[in-house]
Length: 153
Image (cartoon, rainbow, N blue to C red):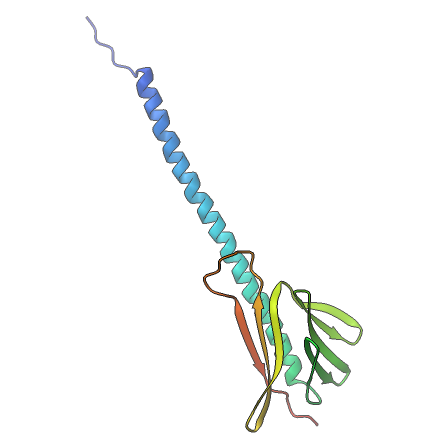
């Protein structure tokens, strides 16, 4: 008699179950990778946009034609062509030059622009914390910028 080898139905079901387990683990790993990649990309974009806004603020303070002064929720910076104001309203920092009103930075939780005078130096400090979509955050997104007005002539 010839002996024929083949797969039984039970063996096929075991192989299919093992394949399903492996695919399930692979999908779970890919899902976590994708979620963490998107979170990292969002954090990097937040850092870049905050640094750009901070550098714009510092440039405005440095090129002031007179000493800046505090206004409610912000700062007013005198310039040749008028006054540049930064105000914090409803989670956004607004920059106004003349009648043009633009959002300098979105999704801000707290923002404080204050006089940071030191001996022989009159500086300004902008401290802000970005709003985060996560409830529990390991590292709070805090930023601090310092600028010294240029020569007022």
